[in-house]
Length: 195
Image (tube, rainbow, N blue to C red):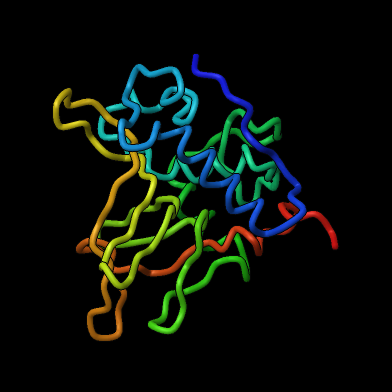
């Protein structure tokens, strides 16, 4: 298996936390090259669920990232390998990221923007991913995504991708999906060291 020293918290500064989140997501996706079903890292991120018919692994990447950052709160985390007492549960990734994170989840508005490492929630259809960067002047957003399919192999995959980012009326769009909100990782208790 690919092995690197992935950072873990708590982190001394918000910048260190955000850099660590992006480094973990980058590793999980192997950047633009991507990872697909059968890759040992893909299997670790999805805990082997990528083999299930019609399974979408989009929520596995943020959960893997949060776990590797050091989060162990099972009210938020939905993993089987988090050393917790609750096993992974179907249908819980999105709801835990959005509704179990309290004030750490920010509902989108035209005056706010997520930052590197935040977990974006977009719809229709519903999807979550980890933010790498936003370049508003050029209208581009770069994210790390699972729940994709490699067009050449037809296998479930994850990779870094670039989409359009724009304001349309009173909504922010990521590609053709509405940005509903994001999990601000700096607001999650325990990831930043006490001042």
